[in-house]
Length: 91
Image (cartoon, rainbow, N blue to C red; front, side, top):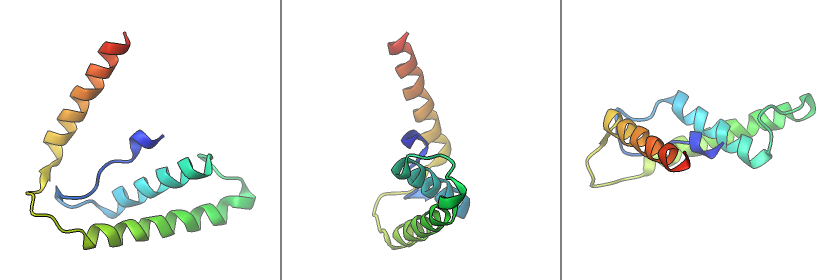
């Protein structure tokens, strides 16, 4: 599950609200141990996703770096290569 949480800091263009929310959802799913909460827990689950997304947005807004922004396409290519290498080792 956690592989779906991507680094969001220092990219050009910056992370979108949708990316932040997706990362928050994955985090809450992992911590709760549930990908789809019961009706009894749905409100608490949603509140947690909202809180984590807000905290993540605040963090990303406040982080500073001297490094140049990373290119999303280059990083995606590197990730694909790592995945292919993992698959080759597993085969």
